[in-house]
Amino acid sequence: MIYKGNLEKNCENFSGIRMRTFVCNILKGDPCEVIKEEADFCTMIFFLSSFVRKDIEEILKKINKIIKKGGLILIRDYGLYDLAMIRNEKKGNMIEENCFRKGDGIVVQYFSKEGLRELFVGMNYEEVQNDYCTVERENKKTGVNLSRVFINAKFRKK
Ligand SMILES: C[S@@+](CC[C@H](N)C(=O)[O-])C[C@H]1O[C@@H](n2cnc3c(N)ncnc32)[C@H](O)[C@@H]1O
Image 1 (tube, rainbow, N blue to C red):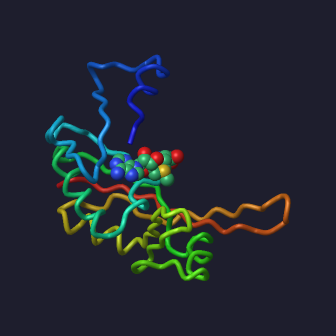
Image 2 (cartoon, helix red, strand yellow):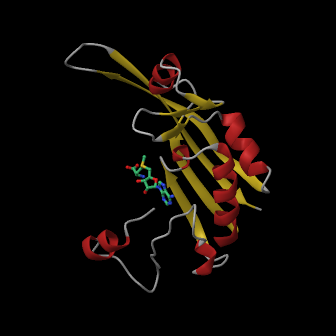
């Protein structure tokens, strides 16, 4: 979700002619009430991981209606066996395969390349890119090495 007000106020190159912004709770609303098959692309940056599998399928059906043929869906999100996933697994927070509910109630989904591919190919998208991206970070305070796993993917609507 792009914060409509922030984008219009803080981005000097913002053009209301080239870009339309609106706020949408994707679980309750439907963006196709505002635009239909017009979007060239949709970025989902640490977005899909906020939902359980059933909701992801419904969200993607809605997004599909606003993407034009040849349009792209660009994803960066949490990947399978990310450090945080292993920690959640140890705490017994799993609510469905590869999906956890944290102590604060927030849902976190961890994606495999195969799982993402299945979602999009099933909706008639072609895979352009679908890779794990591993990042090693050291916690300077504790000296502990943090192995983060993210997924970068790009799917094109056929
Ligand atoms: C983990 S945050 C990622 C925020 C940001 N993309 C980033 O990388 O810093 C998950 C984001 O998903 C969006 N989101 C969560 N639930 C949503 C909903 N029901 N409808 C629309 N967007 C939602 C919110 O914008 C929320 O900030």
